[in-house]
Image 1 (tube, rainbow, N blue to C red):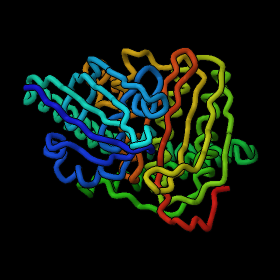
Image 2: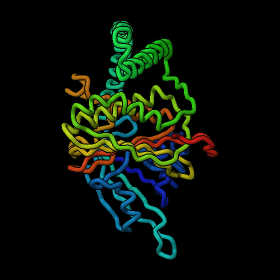
Image 3: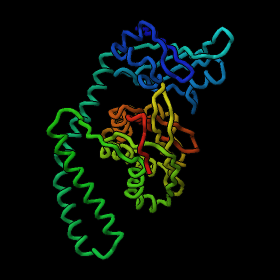
Length: 345
């Protein structure tokens, strides 16, 4: 079955209209998509390292991408995509039209494989939650002993206090996880810079072992309504991936900025590494549920889970890749209070 979908975006990449086929496939999501950046409901379309839609808006020329593999609406498709500029009467570019033709084969089988992956993640998560409690108690006992034994070492006590705090949070999270059927966020107004500083502290020893340096590039951003425990886990996944990918030497930069998308204020958090970048063959599948040997080895869940957490916060996660020059993971988090009367330190 051949599927044809198309939609239009404005100058800020916000969706302005969708065709009937796409509206039928999206259902209620079609109405919510209007006014939002297109990559809120479909993964970003890349032409090399750049967003292809933005490139058409900037350059005013049509781009055709053939054989673009995409995981979308619970199915993996191969699409031919044509992105064309749209003009005002005075020949000014005012948007773009994205036309997608997909040949969809064996849909039930692929849907079954996709949902099986999600079910496997759920089973692994429940097993992990049950199995981690005994080791946690052992770690906590060891930390109590070591704090008593080496209480005069200020650096050790600082790290031991972090371990204590994280154990308590993790234990509370496991209790909530096993007693509820949905991921329930407990949001509060939090300083995102304090959260990033804590993550740098937690991962500092790993970074030092690999001669990796942390760099901060902060601007004034408001406090955010977040679940600090979950968001910390999401960012830790990203930082640990970056450390693992870089090998020895280099920098990881933490950057915060304010940005406006579809008239909504967002805080963007960039985690940029100076590693080799992501191979083209793996790049498009980074945010998909893991499969095959990656899943068998317990790998590949990190970025997928991080994106789920960010989306639960009403935000989005994207990956910017420059082969040979590192990769950037960008988090978009909405500002709940437009006043922003309190700012991160």
